[in-house]
Amino acid sequence: MKVNVYEEELPDERRTKFVKKTAQTSNEFCGVSIFLKSAKALHDTETDDDRSAVTFWGEPKRVAALLREAADEIEAGRD
Image 1 (cartoon, rainbow, N blue to C red):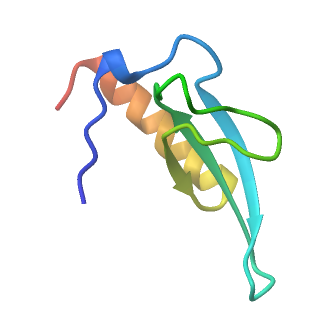
Image 2: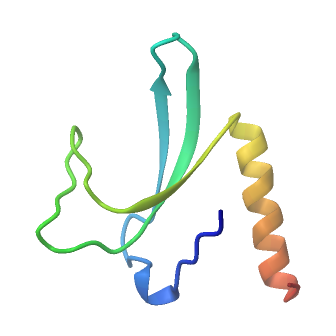
């Protein structure tokens, strides 16, 4: 699957959030969400966040390494 997110879809405020969920199997999963702009009718509260987001799930150090690698690619101007 390929997800395209364009600059105009990125919000100016609170763009990322660390998330943690416990599955029905009691396994715990961590991730980081990168939020996108949403319709003004949607809301963001501590218990109900309806904004669109792309979330990368996995072990925190592995996700962080992937995002650092992505940032390095952007800064180097590579494809």
